[in-house]
Amino acid sequence: MTKTDLAVGVDRTGRGRARPTAEFALGYFLILPALLLMALVIGVPLAKAIGTSLTNSTFINPVPTFVGLRNFALMVQSPVFWEVVRTSLIWTGTVVIAQLICGFATALLLNRRFRGRALARSLIILPWVCPGVIAAIIWRVIDDPYLGPINAFLAWSGLPHPFIAWLGRPETALGAVIVAAIWKGTPFSTIMYLAALQGVSTEILEAATIDGAGAWGRLRHVIIPQTMPVIRVLVLLTTVWTFNYFELIYIMTQGGPGDSTQIFPTYIYKLAFDQIRYGAASAYGMIALLILLVFSLLYIAQLNRAKVLE
Image (cartoon, rainbow, N blue to C red; front, side, top):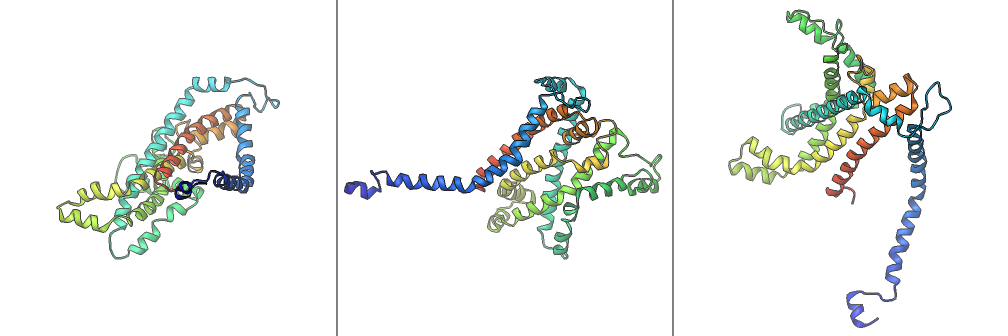
């Protein structure tokens, strides 16, 4: 090595390049057990599901026959598939947007100083920590046409025909389960947004106030831009969770009445365990997996953009 090489840190012998290679090899060796476990737990069931989606596996066909893409062709030709897609989009989009607005608004309120703020911050999380099955039962009672408090209030108000079967009518069932999902999921969004608001610079807020910015101006030009990384990550995360949510809809309506509240998870369950059509259920599962994969990749990209994974 020349003096110039020593000055700039160049190792012409190659020994400097060998150490990083050995460290990378050691790193992969150490995570090899975890990779093998993931391949066993995730890869094997996924490969099995892909294989089943290409067969006509049903209750009366215990020995599945390879049918290629026939299940997918029948699926896209079925009006039920497009109804499930439409309902899933309405369900996911409405719940995510409502949780964003309600959660951020509640976080702004809880970020202000008032008597009992600590108690309010503690109680706000209760709906989210409540198990999904319990939450679904609670809302089934609330929406009950004869015992529910909603209809009791309508009857007390003197409205005609107040005993509405909220979960028994196609035009109201989806809205009822969406309200329940918003109630359950908003507290988590509130806590996350509240944590993000703690990082908003008070100096910038004070400077904006001195410059004449009102509450709306401070929110639009200071608070939202500084919390936008958390907003993006949380929106993508709640989208994945909501799209894949199962127990709330299943306990409240089981996808009914008819198929008016069927989303991908509940309809896959119906095909697999009620109708025993494993091939068709796996085909629907593959479509749901592709949709979730898109949102998951966006979520990971946003984490990398925010340098969370570094």
